[in-house]
Image (cartoon, rainbow, N blue to C red; front, side):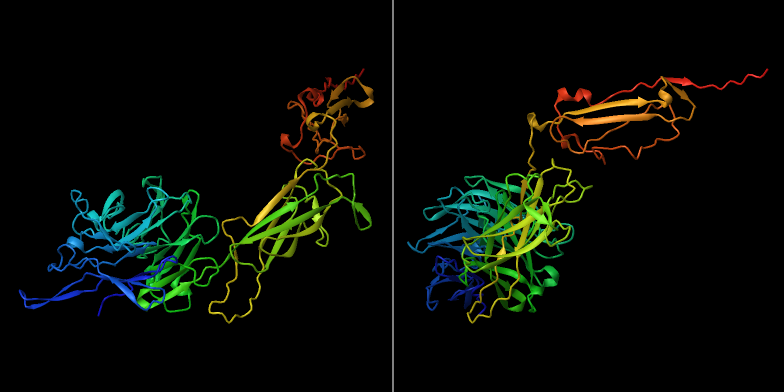
Length: 610
């Protein structure tokens, strides 16, 4: 018997499982034709908790029905199905000459609701409505609506959203495909991607052709309320591989990474020369990430799997670690693989520093010399949905990330020589704070006290060997939450004893020219030396690396400029810095520059011969 029992099997954790065989045939004898007629009505079985006895549901059976394609004669109910707490939703794409329909069986009232194409032929012949089905909260967070895909509608595909009205389904919204033959609507998933309480919609179009052929696409629709669906500016594309048929299956996986948003799996069963692949996409505040967070290929699972990803089943936590797992079918291998979800660890790292760095107080000793230092405290707190074991973290602490590139780091860690980074390990537990303190030493030659001092800690899970377990499902190693950055920073300032507003400097420049032999002018061409005396005084708050700039007239050429090596300089000047490196109030700027007048005369030697 080629019933294809289990072609669709759903087992949400809150209801009993159901299995459908859409090729189940109703066989009867026709006196008129003197032969047995077979009508592929399809059947679904609803099982109890013991899975031993199933209640069969044949929604398309009619005593008077005799013709193959007419009405429900070949409806093939159960080619797709979806379960809620009290509803079994079945697709029946063969109804009315493959116009298709969606059937909803209420397990409480045992009543049946159907979609009848009585709205001026809203669904045309051969549309295959019901090829995919689902349900979600589209009109409001407290109502439930039914979704049905018609991949052959107008050869471009369409998806309908229905509301339950007594025993009928009424169309309240619809979205359409745009590429001929893309099979838009052959798969769909109603899932709240942005955690607003409303279901959004993912629609697969696995035969979409882009740059090559049948790469496949998944269209993303964000619910604006009242089932008004806005298509995202991008589509999910997988790897854009040749004939991958990405989007053949889509499944809601729940919140895998503990960021508060549901995540989904998308199958591409013909990717990689029919080996297949499954992609994981993460929901987020604005909908869904356009790039996958994980790609799982059939070829990497250590088995000869083919068409891995042809079917997906989720909604069950088989190992009771608090996260949904997913079963992936490999059609050409007659196999299914269960992928278990690793528990997620959320880590919050924090840094603590003194309020300010006081250069006048040397609290430490380095090589028997008083040294300015400060304590850097690194703390970690961890949280997990269900994991309660010890978490071993390894971290890297780095100092002075904002230092000027032309100067060395202003702080270093003991035992690392001149290195501005150090490593450490810490063991933390759920709900507990684990801290470690490091001492950072200040270099002796620090001149930049204006640029803030920033410390950063980055961390990762320390690899450890888990003990073997006799349990059916050994515990999985936890993983850090990927959506969170695995680092944190803190910034501090040097203490400054400021006497002026805004810690303003007050630079005062004086300069004079000293001519040879105390002359009142300088003779051009004499070859003598001019001495420039300058004095820079700061009567305000600390100044950061002041700069003295000399401008010479362009119309005078000098043999050379000599520097007096014996000149005592109170400020060392290296390179130009931004004006924001230091602050000086406007009323103090008048004496920051000076122009000097150099009287010039031509020197002439006259020889008189008599």
